[in-house]
Image (tube, rainbow over all chains, first blue to last red; front, side, top):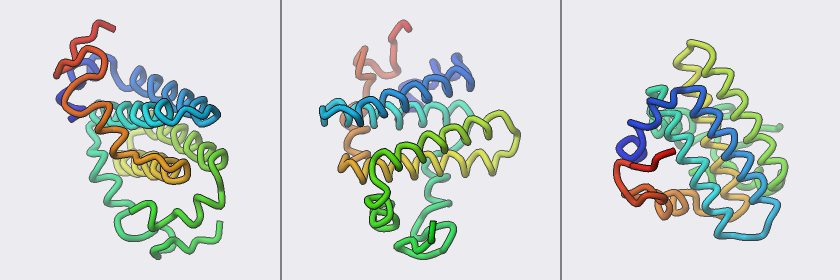
Length: 87
Length: 87
Protein backbone atom coordinates (compact mmCIF):
# COMPACT_ATOMS: atom_id res chain seq x y z
CA UNK A 1 0.00 0.00 0.00
CA UNK A 2 2.64 2.53 1.06
CA UNK A 3 4.83 1.44 -1.82
CA UNK A 4 2.20 2.28 -4.41
CA UNK A 5 1.25 5.53 -2.70
CA UNK A 6 4.62 7.01 -2.00
CA UNK A 7 7.52 5.10 -3.49
CA UNK A 8 8.14 7.52 -6.37
CA UNK A 9 8.46 10.29 -3.80
CA UNK A 10 10.33 8.32 -1.13
CA UNK A 11 12.96 7.03 -3.52
CA UNK A 12 13.70 10.59 -4.63
CA UNK A 13 14.07 11.73 -1.00
CA UNK A 14 16.50 8.91 -0.24
CA UNK A 15 17.39 6.98 2.88
CA UNK A 16 18.78 9.81 5.01
CA UNK A 17 15.91 12.18 4.29
CA UNK A 18 13.30 9.50 4.95
CA UNK A 19 15.00 8.50 8.20
CA UNK A 20 15.02 12.15 9.31
CA UNK A 21 11.25 12.31 8.70
CA UNK A 22 10.76 9.12 10.72
CA UNK A 23 12.68 10.59 13.66
CA UNK A 24 10.54 13.71 13.45
CA UNK A 25 7.34 11.66 13.48
CA UNK A 26 8.55 9.68 16.50
CA UNK A 27 9.12 13.00 18.29
CA UNK A 28 5.57 14.10 17.40
CA UNK A 29 4.25 10.78 18.71
CA UNK A 30 6.03 11.51 22.00
CA UNK A 31 4.32 14.90 22.17
CA UNK A 32 0.93 13.31 21.47
CA UNK A 33 1.56 10.82 24.30
CA UNK A 34 1.88 13.76 26.68
CA UNK A 35 -1.45 15.18 25.53
CA UNK A 36 -4.90 13.68 25.96
CA UNK A 37 -6.27 13.80 22.43
CA UNK A 38 -6.90 10.15 21.46
CA UNK A 39 -7.66 10.95 17.84
CA UNK A 40 -4.41 12.90 17.50
CA UNK A 41 -2.49 10.07 19.18
CA UNK A 42 -3.97 7.56 16.76
CA UNK A 43 -2.89 9.72 13.82
CA UNK A 44 0.65 10.03 15.14
CA UNK A 45 0.92 6.25 15.44
CA UNK A 46 -0.27 6.03 11.83
CA UNK A 47 2.36 8.55 10.74
CA UNK A 48 5.20 6.68 12.43
CA UNK A 49 4.23 3.40 10.82
CA UNK A 50 3.80 5.12 7.45
CA UNK A 51 7.29 6.58 7.57
CA UNK A 52 8.75 3.31 8.82
CA UNK A 53 7.10 1.61 5.83
CA UNK A 54 8.50 4.29 3.50
CA UNK A 55 11.99 3.80 4.93
CA UNK A 56 11.67 0.03 4.48
CA UNK A 57 10.63 0.56 0.85
CA UNK A 58 13.55 2.87 0.15
CA UNK A 59 16.02 0.41 1.65
CA UNK A 60 14.28 -2.56 0.00
CA UNK A 61 13.46 -4.31 3.27
CA UNK A 62 10.19 -6.27 3.51
CA UNK A 63 8.90 -4.86 6.80
CA UNK A 64 6.19 -7.44 7.39
CA UNK A 65 8.55 -10.33 6.66
CA UNK A 66 11.20 -8.81 8.95
CA UNK A 67 8.75 -8.48 11.83
CA UNK A 68 7.27 -11.95 11.40
CA UNK A 69 10.66 -13.65 11.10
CA UNK A 70 11.91 -12.13 14.31
CA UNK A 71 8.79 -12.18 16.47
CA UNK A 72 6.24 -14.68 15.24
CA UNK A 73 4.92 -16.91 18.00
CA UNK A 74 7.68 -16.43 20.55
CA UNK A 75 10.11 -13.99 22.09
CA UNK A 76 13.38 -14.05 20.08
CA UNK A 77 15.43 -14.00 23.30
CA UNK A 78 13.77 -16.50 25.67
CA UNK A 79 11.78 -18.39 22.96
CA UNK A 80 8.70 -18.30 25.21
CA UNK A 81 5.22 -16.89 24.80
CA UNK A 82 4.45 -14.89 26.81
CA UNK A 83 8.03 -13.66 27.07
CA UNK A 84 9.75 -14.72 30.29
CA UNK A 85 12.96 -12.70 29.94
CA UNK A 86 14.15 -11.16 33.18
CA UNK A 87 15.06 -7.64 32.06
CA UNK B 1 0.76 -11.19 18.58
CA UNK B 2 2.81 -8.57 20.42
CA UNK B 3 0.03 -8.16 22.92
CA UNK B 4 0.10 -11.82 23.93
CA UNK B 5 3.90 -11.94 23.99
CA UNK B 6 4.71 -8.82 25.87
CA UNK B 7 1.71 -7.00 27.30
CA UNK B 8 2.26 -8.17 30.89
CA UNK B 9 5.75 -6.72 30.70
CA UNK B 10 4.93 -3.60 28.69
CA UNK B 11 2.08 -2.54 30.94
CA UNK B 12 4.42 -2.75 33.94
CA UNK B 13 7.03 -0.61 32.18
CA UNK B 14 4.44 2.04 31.33
CA UNK B 15 4.09 4.58 28.54
CA UNK B 16 7.18 6.69 29.18
CA UNK B 17 9.50 3.71 29.58
CA UNK B 18 8.15 2.03 26.46
CA UNK B 19 8.46 5.25 24.45
CA UNK B 20 12.08 5.60 25.61
CA UNK B 21 12.78 2.07 24.30
CA UNK B 22 11.17 2.95 20.98
CA UNK B 23 13.38 6.02 20.60
CA UNK B 24 16.42 3.89 21.37
CA UNK B 25 15.44 1.33 18.74
CA UNK B 26 14.92 4.09 16.15
CA UNK B 27 18.46 5.28 16.92
CA UNK B 28 19.78 1.73 16.42
CA UNK B 29 17.91 1.52 13.11
CA UNK B 30 19.69 4.71 12.05
CA UNK B 31 23.04 3.12 12.89
CA UNK B 32 22.14 -0.01 10.91
CA UNK B 33 21.23 2.19 7.92
CA UNK B 34 24.79 3.52 7.94
CA UNK B 35 26.22 0.00 7.93
CA UNK B 36 25.95 -2.60 5.18
CA UNK B 37 24.65 -5.62 7.04
CA UNK B 38 21.26 -6.42 5.50
CA UNK B 39 20.36 -9.02 8.10
CA UNK B 40 21.11 -6.60 10.92
CA UNK B 41 19.09 -3.88 9.17
CA UNK B 42 16.13 -6.24 8.84
CA UNK B 43 16.31 -7.03 12.57
CA UNK B 44 16.40 -3.36 13.50
CA UNK B 45 13.27 -2.71 11.43
CA UNK B 46 11.62 -5.61 13.28
CA UNK B 47 12.64 -4.12 16.64
CA UNK B 48 11.20 -0.70 15.83
CA UNK B 49 7.88 -2.15 14.75
CA UNK B 50 7.81 -4.41 17.83
CA UNK B 51 8.31 -1.47 20.19
CA UNK B 52 5.81 0.63 18.29
CA UNK B 53 3.30 -2.22 18.70
CA UNK B 54 4.14 -2.43 22.41
CA UNK B 55 3.60 1.29 22.83
CA UNK B 56 0.28 1.05 21.00
CA UNK B 57 -0.77 -1.79 23.33
CA UNK B 58 0.17 0.16 26.45
CA UNK B 59 -1.75 3.23 25.27
CA UNK B 60 -4.66 1.08 24.03
CA UNK B 61 -4.39 2.22 20.42
CA UNK B 62 -5.18 -0.28 17.65
CA UNK B 63 -2.11 0.26 15.46
CA UNK B 64 -3.42 -1.55 12.40
CA UNK B 65 -6.74 0.27 12.51
CA UNK B 66 -4.96 3.62 12.99
CA UNK B 67 -2.74 3.02 9.96
CA UNK B 68 -5.54 1.79 7.73
CA UNK B 69 -7.90 4.61 8.66
CA UNK B 70 -5.37 7.27 7.80
CA UNK B 71 -3.65 5.74 4.77
CA UNK B 72 -5.77 3.11 3.08
CA UNK B 73 -6.01 3.56 -0.66
CA UNK B 74 -5.04 7.21 -0.86
CA UNK B 75 -2.80 9.92 0.50
CA UNK B 76 -4.60 11.66 3.43
CA UNK B 77 -3.46 15.08 2.18
CA UNK B 78 -4.06 15.09 -1.59
CA UNK B 79 -6.49 12.08 -1.64
CA UNK B 80 -4.63 10.66 -4.65
CA UNK B 81 -2.83 7.38 -5.27
CA UNK B 82 0.01 7.65 -5.97
CA UNK B 83 0.36 10.74 -3.81
CA UNK B 84 0.58 13.96 -5.81
CA UNK B 85 1.40 16.38 -2.98
CA UNK B 86 3.96 18.99 -3.90
CA UNK B 87 6.21 18.96 -0.84
